[in-house]
Image (cartoon, rainbow, N blue to C red):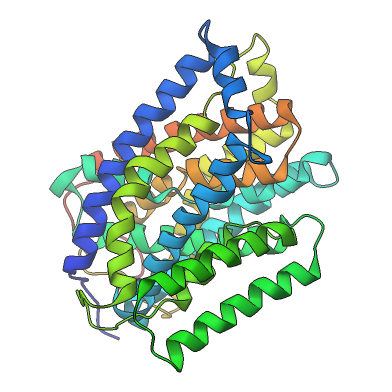
Length: 395
């Protein structure tokens, strides 16, 4: 198998530009939420998110409804990557897929090793995911100092991480299951697949109406309602032709990018980053749960990504792109430790109702994400110019 160099598609360039801008907005909203929560207005600010609105708190509407739209976008992006993006070719996809597996397993095992048999064992899914917006935002700050293939590698790795997080949420963070509602949601999904595959309905509105109904049924079923967003993405007609403006999937993805990046995720940050930093915050960070999160994101991520990638390349399973070396891969692993959005999302599911553990977990996530971003940025800034001849298997 010849060594490969991955060109950047127009679709990926637009995706990268959108994500890096969204990362900056996320940082601003996170800092704002932290500042307000620890100000004299903090009490009123935190109570606002718990106000009842139609049977759910505002915070629940953000996590269950707005984030379903975020998951819809993730599903559309994943579908594009699988059909005609960076994951459509086995030679391009294999390395980030293997790297993602390492970046999922190592942090989860690190957390589990510290928390097995304790009430916080449920948090092992927290350090598994990578925040695409933040990670690509940090990478964007490096400009042309990093090779194009590293941007593709990190984005593909983060997409696969998100897919794994979606599976984990569906499998392990489901409350009491109401089979009738779940079967109803799956029936709506099947009907939309028939609309797509057999009837070839190309209008978006019927799918959006079906998606809203599926979301409601999924919410009532006990399975987290955001899963409906992913299922809807794969029910909407997709064209394998890149930049097909007539494709409903392409049109919806284009419509959602800016609202998700500049409205939904910032609102999620405002609702979830309001952590009150009390006098015992150092003790909270010393708990086995917090140490598992910190260690999983800052240490487990880069080790898992780098080691499994090295094994895959050494065994001949896949190759590094010609403009990458192992220091680039380790740098991508460091940035993979920026968990933020998905990690906080899983935290809310794992420790629902336990305010103390929620706050401690979120603080650990924020500190780990900041540390991973800063270390990754400095590391990649100091890495010498791109070369495919770094020590290690890359014949």
